[in-house]
Length: 222
Image 1 (cartoon, rainbow, N blue to C red):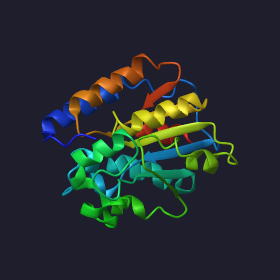
Image 2 (cartoon, rainbow, N blue to C red; image 1 turned 45 degrees about the vertical axis):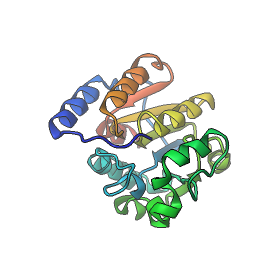
Image 3 (spheres, one colour; image 1 turned 120 degrees about the vertical axis):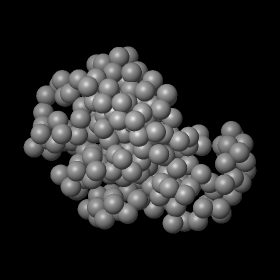
């Protein structure tokens, strides 16, 4: 998770407009009760005032809020939990947290891992799955939560497009889920890699990932 770089509002509008226009929509049909909204790492840790602040985070909140309002009981939030202190972690993660000592729990405090206020209100009925790595699938909690539900389709929102969203989408693909990325509800601290990953999703994963706008998802999720 690279340190955030300033993002100009003109650039944001241009990028969002291009990606929304590129979104193909729900090419495999409408959504139903077997669908789940999986919102990735929309936490205070990635909001203003923190080392990992994502400039776009607040701009995608209205879209994510609309999806949560539509089906709060069919929403799961993931939360990225940093190491407790500098140098803690397995293998390369120890090096990672020596570099990012400013983001450890010892430095940022437990309040940082909470969901942003606009979304925290949905829990419950929405569920929360904590993880200590990029993918929510590696530690087994998400698999355990979904196993008895009959979910076969996952709508993904949140951040970052090129890190935890990528890991989330690939894990869902490997498990055979229908995967839908909501173009106007994804954010990253890097414009360039956000754009590159959206192009990757739209081209190389055309049979396994659908990209649609929030408006289209809401219309098709009855």
